[in-house]
Length: 124
Image (tube, rainbow, N blue to C red; front, side, top):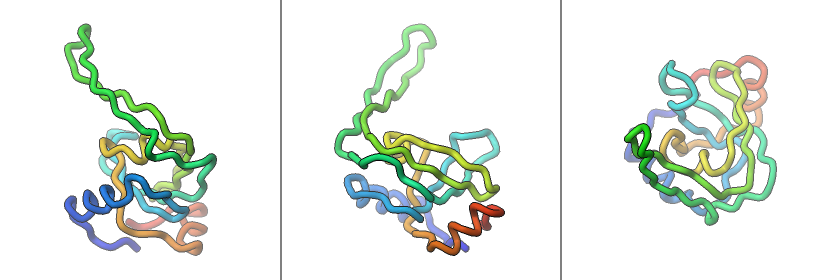
């Protein structure tokens, strides 16, 4: 079961964690993976070395679509995430760590919660 956090608490946690290694059990919130609204997930596996200081966001203007786009580069690790509905995604470090569509939640799931989530999902 997850606690209630407002945007400011999550933002301050994200700021504090920008250059620190993330751990298995870290909870995240994402709204960019489908159009069904916010999803809550738990990191259950990390592949590769985390290099948060290598992540750069380039702000570019697409002259054809006339829209600003953010290009994220850097990072090295790949984070496997189980979502509350039981779905699984692999997300590159540059997206987990870059405030834009994914927000770190100031909460770490224990091994029992991760195991349950991998079997049947979990309640946010």
